[in-house]
Length: 282
Image (tube, rainbow, N blue to C red; front, top):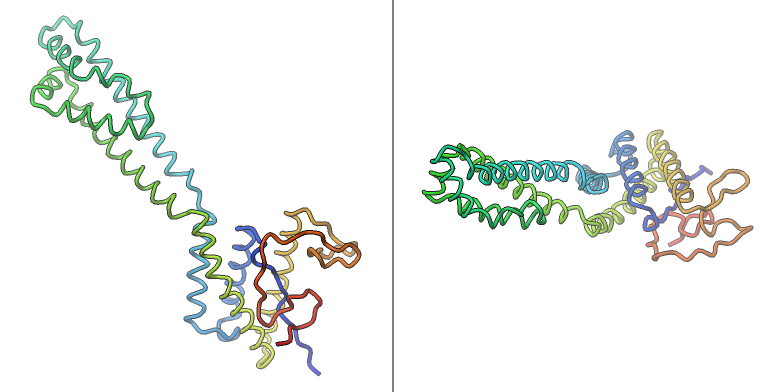
């Protein structure tokens, strides 16, 4: 009688985001190595699985506090610097010995004095206030006074920075909405049945039409599952047996597990869901 190797069981629901992603990415690579025909999949089935895994990888590995946050922070610093220079020149221009510039500075001071403290308000409120300041400075008289004071280039720079900050804020809002934990949960719900189908198909293919590649695929997949279970146990603080085999919760007969599962796990077809080493009988 030939020996049959079954795919080992693993509770997908218990895995953390990185553990789950680790398993799925490695499964995808194992399929690519064995080739989809040896595993028993169609190109469309593998493409669907690949698309979901790639999307999950983007979300799990995404760091929303990286590039966009740095860009927003720098843009805001630049806005504050331009505002400070603009306000300083207007305030001190009143005392200039050149009458035309002193007059222009006094008129500008009367116009923009309500905005002098906007560098200290929250960033998004500041964006609105700067729009108001630029609107007040867009009048014909104000433009003439800015030209006299050689400050027109500052207001143009301020307008460009404020538009950039607004665009960056919108982009970050979209990313925050896109990379939410709920999105990751939804992706995992889509991938779970695909994993069950792939492992069931590969196992059946290896039983009915075994090849060296299909046998190697099952062997390497089981090794991967064993490693992921080990990582899970290390993370959750479960001890190892004396023979250094990973202790799965509830599998140590000398010390039954008292751990309650955080949520029920869906049994996977064609695999050992009881942990007793025997194939599931349907």
